[in-house]
Length: 386
Image (tube, rainbow, N blue to C red):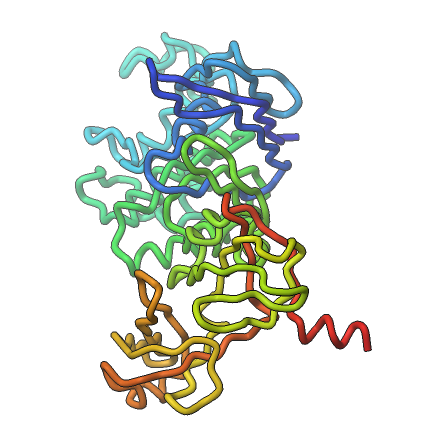
């Protein structure tokens, strides 16, 4: 079993609190991503699990055993860094073989010339060779084994770093922004390859990134962190559709969720800007709220159409299949962004009057502190009372 349990872990650097009582359980064989902006504590937490940093408080268990007082090599984890951390003077083969050589062979057996004649070394080297070539074949880098890191592309270096981690068959793979140095096309390709690798190995992965695309496309579950705190742990689908905190809703999703201030006007309506939105908030009349509305829940209707909000077109992003219409609305500091079919892009002239219709069933409500408020659309509520 290779489950990881992080129990109330805190970390301080002098007067700076990097982690604030973080608790997280990672299941055996799960792909868990720690997602958050730079400086939120996610890499610090990963280094604590690896044993590269000592926590100020709390505990870490791997496979049901407390590892707080174990050095990194005794924790049976493998870490893949953003910088790949390959030895530049070694070939890919030597980089991949090194962890096995250090673990399996005695100092005498590791000697460059004399070591070959030490009893048992030949059999050990054959076993290491078989392991390295098997992993290299699985990563499609068997033809690169004789090259040095400087002779490899970014993607090839990343595979070599993964191979060095895989040969040990660790309990847990720890990955700290391993794709951030790659170009956009290669990052997309490597996301697919990492997800496939996880399925093949069935190992526990803990992956750190600030890129929501990586988190949403590869993970079984995502842990969103900000300011040293763990805000929410859920599947990618749940994070997007059912965020428990406004900060999560704003961080997950592109374009960023629209946030509109409002006040509960009645049992079935919320007043937002100059209009009423048919949504039933489970909060007293007069409660200040914030409406979170995804761009796909807003439809540009033209100046004369039925609309929840009205304004003027500030910008149109034509992405081919879709277009995003930025609408400047009185009372808001930033434009509302609505999604439309890309074939309609030419309909929206810059500066022209425009209305935006909202799907009330997909509105998310948050209180002044940013915590989620249960809500139902008034239309759905009327139907339920039939």
